[in-house]
Image 1: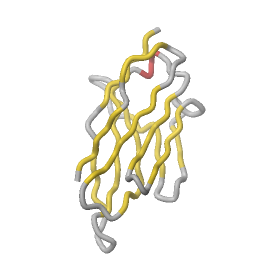
Image 2: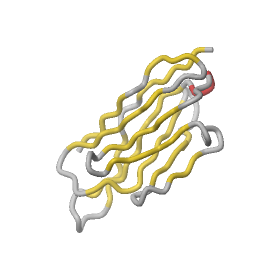
Image 3: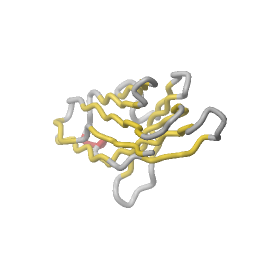
Image 4: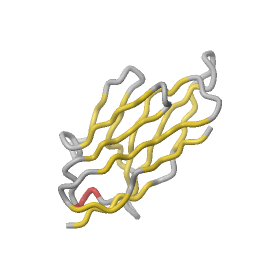
Length: 120
């Protein structure tokens, strides 16, 4: 099983980016998923969660600007980031709980980090 993250880059303040995290391999289903970010030397911050049923929650730092979504058929989780600020500059990571078989417990996987840089 692999999680491939994509979509990071450089954008001006006020702009938008969309991050995606695609799971591949022999997978039965994706369960709860989330996005974290971490600047060097800082703790990883949970910024958005989407449950298996589609319920989403956000940290106060991104609420109203970021939207997390999922496409179960494509086994993909996305993070739409609007009205980006320089303080959003960070490395972003997806976190997904994956069930390999209908009868198996969830396993936790991390995508590789993707860098988002917001210039002022």
